[in-house]
Image 1 (tube, rainbow, N blue to C red):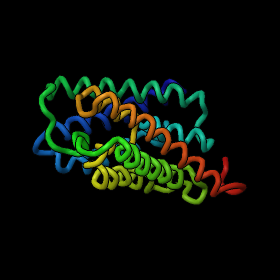
Image 2 (image 1 turned 30 degrees about the vertical axis):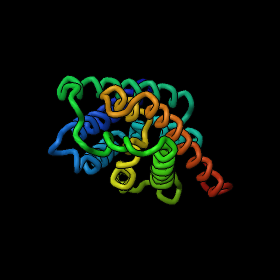
Image 3 (image 1 turned 90 degrees about the horizontal axis):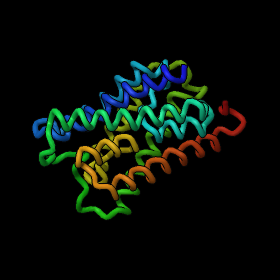
Length: 218
């Protein structure tokens, strides 16, 4: 079963990162890239959420694991699948779009902002994303709802529009890896994505547990 779940995570992460690359590198689509990216995440969550949880994001996997709704035995294959899917998706985008100059868009923006601003923007909206995931998809009070995919996808959409011009709006270490491979973020920015996004996911999980002590813990 862990292998099957990892396959679902691979598929969802692939289409998320593929959508990021194809829209950001398309002049006609770049302005609305956040809408396409948030929608891609939403539909993939609805497709695979009942099976693997529909994380498609190593920071989300960290948060859900710290919250206690995912085991470390599942988390490690998830991370492998997510980062591998991001690399494969980035390769597919490069094959289809080439390595030309990216169109102005969320993942290509932020060059005029200092690294602390990148870090803060990524941390805040990764925190928001994982906070929404935990409260809409893992909390007892929202158990069995049908809106979690929409809520999660729209969190990414809002974040990309709000701080995409600052940090590129990854909110996802796997997306950060894909952006680096596609030439949309240099190695330093990729490291910022890793640190800020994992930190945001961990803090969201710890806050969730603190707020739900004795009530909503698994």
